[in-house]
Length: 332
Image (cartoon, rainbow, N blue to C red; front, side):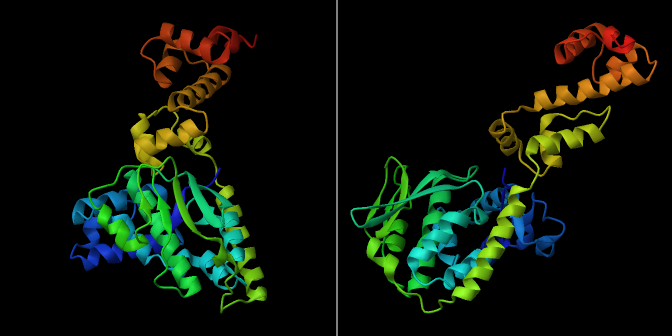
């Protein structure tokens, strides 16, 4: 499972946008893990939870309904870090698309894209999108950033594309036409970003095959780093095992792992777990340890793993392990 995070450049650009509108950085960062460290605490990537909170705070402070469009227009090639550099070294736009489809999870691990060519048009379809922000924000950010990147690569500042969006026209729909042109369509079945197939053959002036190979190797390494992150379930188990005898409520565990409760619950569902399942697993482990390695009375063990009486503990333990506490203690 991929580590859910975004490139730090996206956050820094958002902070700059909000500050230019007259709002303090401290206000924007409040409620995130960066509240105390400031931007000095930002590494190469920022957690998706922090990104979500920053976006929500930016909406709250600025009241800017078109925030996604405006942020996307600021995401140029350099904002995409090493992947943006790799794009610039390609021979043509076709190679850029190949790189994008291989490594776009570096930009958004929870995003899923499909690419196809139909009737001389290139179609990038959004299968799944990042969550926890207004639906239009994610599409605005993605598609405005795609357009800005294309314009930069091809040196076509007036390039227009067709955009299909799976939601009704928002109050600020007029902003879409300013950004993308008149070929914008709402209430579509799926989100799509569409441009002419003929652009794929466009030669890029900064083509450099040797550099491209180096950048692609770095992209592969970074993607592997994301894939090596432990699952949320594994991190939860590790934390609960350390908190022996102290079993926090789900929102507290979510906060300790730097997630909102909603995001945390969704992550576990994606891994086919619930917090209660993980909690019960750890309580069973701790109870088994006490039963096998101590002479503590059953009532004390029950208390240590969160039960007020021994009878409820007996029933729960048998459900967890398929054995009675007495049988485990006797080694049966």
